[in-house]
Each structure stands twice: as C-alpha cells, then as structure tokens.
Length: 151
Length: 121
Image 1 (tube, rainbow over the protein chains, first blue to last red):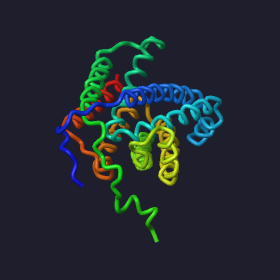
Image 2: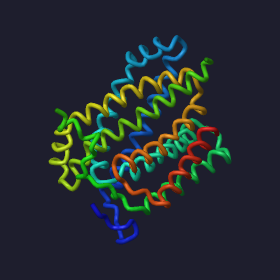
Image 3: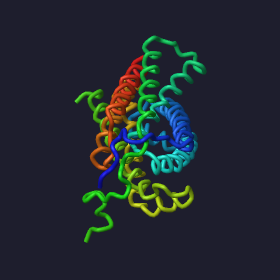
C-alpha cells in the first residue's frame, strides 16, 4: 500500500484532537496525584500489604472513575491519531504535575526542573508539527490479527 | 538481588505492560478510524478482545508500578519509566506501520531528557 511521503501535503490537526489530548493530560495529572497520595498513605508494610492497602483505599474508587473517563477519551483520540503522536504529548502531564507541586505544595523552583519543563515543552511542540496520522488503519498484521483467523 | 535491583525489574515490567497495553488499545481504536463519535465507540467495543487485552496489561502495570514505588524513590522510578516513550514509538513503527519522522524522534528525545530532569529535580 503506497502512502504519501510525510512532507507531501499540509496537515492540520483537528481541534477535537487537541481537546482530547488536553483532557488526557489533565486526567493523567489527576491520576498521578491521587495515586501518589494513596501510595504514601498505605506504604510502610510489606509489598503485599501495600497492594492490599491500595485496593482498600477509598480514593481507589476515584482513581477507577478517572481511569474510566480516560479510557473513553483516549480511545477516541487514538482513533484519530498515531499512537506515537498522542502518547508523547501526554508527557505534558509532567509539566502540570510540576507546576501544581510548585504552586500548591510550595515545592522549590530549581533550574533543573525548569530546564526539564522547557525540554518537554519544546519536545511537545516538535511533535505537534508532525502529521498526526500516518499509520495504515486497515492493514491486517499477519501475527496480531490472527485472533479472527486462527483455526 | 538487592531491593533496588528488584525495583528496577518491576519498573521495566511496568514499561513493557504500558507499551503492550497501548498497542492493544490502538489496534482496537484503528477499527473506528474516520467514524463519527458514537459509532466509533461501538466499532471499538466490537474489538473487545483487544480492549480486554489492553485492560489486562494496564492492570498488571498498576501492580508492578505500585510495587516499584515501594522499592524505589519516585525520583528514580519516574525517569526510568520514561523510556516507555521510545519503546512505544518503536512498537508503533513495527506493528502499526506508523511513519516516524526525524522531527518526531527529536521531539521524543527532548521529552525523554526533560522528564528525566524533572524527575531528578
């Protein structure tokens, strides 16, 4: 199957895709914050008791609700973009988490952190300028699509 | 094997599960490409074996990551886990036939270094 070269035509990422990616970044950030809180709350015992503690923690239900929202949103985003386009852009959640910890938890603003945030921003900008869909959605992979065709 | 080494193994396990899970979800999502939103969700759910596999991978990843965080500080675990960006990109090229331009590789490299710096700060 021949496809146009990457630079052949101008491409525009639909606004709905950017909205979906922004939502994914916000949910990722919220999940990280809630997860860190629950791990901090239950940590102290053996690994198995930590896992059990996580499963019994009241915030688990909030995490599951957020995962459900993220799942629906992420599936819609993935139906419109490459995985290698969308996934790195969700690294923007690291920026939100760092900004949140600086603002709400009075974390120190270090040069190392600011340099890291700057690198992530430039990286996201570089990726945003690439074609958002280059994969071949209807291509059947001889190994991974064998579920329907296996004898 | 030290606790730290075991933690590293669990981080790498979480990375592998994340990459496999994302691949499964993308395989399901590809069947809805170009459709309107509601019919897209129906088409994706029709590929429930891929979604089920993805959910399974992410569930295992959750366990691995939780264990890793009890053995390693998050400032070590998080930068280490950022290698998933490279793993997912390589798997996208191999199994999803996505074209990865130099610009995209450059962006991924910068994000990888940026995440490491934020994690270490």
